[in-house]
Length: 419
Image (cartoon, rainbow, N blue to C red; front, side):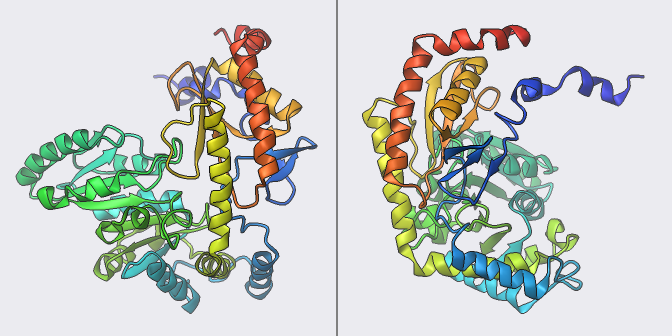
């Protein structure tokens, strides 16, 4: 019999095999200083394009004041226990009521953490007789939630309505045999590419196929729509989203998440969502902090306006210089380049060391081989000077990539990895 750990030691995975070269710099980097448009990386100031603090709330004095006061009053532990048993407070209820009103839903339920909340919500919403149909580019939390499903599930091609219909036809035939229903899952904004999910087109199919729609709007909440209620509001179909999900980790610059739906559905989830029933309640620090942040989303539209000023300046500037930013329709700004993983590492090191630009790098297996994706997140704290410096730097690194500079620099790395 083989030792369970043999496989792990022999094959560290497509990303893990780069650990000795990448860890501490390309992955698990340490950004230091106050969360802002400029932070410290390995002792040097860099313009940070990798922080999901869309509205710039993380380091505002009024936000930190509320966080600090809550910490002093309640400590880090209160309330103790799961909410069903001993961890329930009026402030948890207040936050749920205000979140529901903000996203124009009847009711809401607070989650401790977005990832596990999504996994658990999918598990709770479907039985073995139900069929799930979901976008193939869905976030890992959706994929992991679907993996728990004991029934059938189908993927449809990313944002491809024809593919969705084909799979809905299959799902309907199967549901008629099992006696179950159909859950369609999409994202409001796909966090890697920045594209909005085609919610309006998906909703148009509901009458024909009689499915329920679950939308993960982590990147749309606070950034899209007239009031910031997200991609559904932006596309005019918020009422047609049956279960709405968003996290506090982006626009709210905090910890936690929530589900919003009709009251009857939320009541069911409250008593069947295992990740909340058997987990400690969200500490008061985060609850009081979220109330403050949500109030700022409601009352300070200038934050979202400043965010989009920076988004438009960055995205338009990139397009004017001939960069491929895909089909983003959100704040997420991907820049696609052609090159190998070693070239990508050399390019990013050049950006950080010589230009003071810090952005996330995405390579195979997350995207196809031969592609490099530099993923940028503009925020309300960025300045037009930040944008200008970044555009100049990107023009230089593209030229160096194309003329073979990074290929030569990365040759030793590639040889060491046997590539």
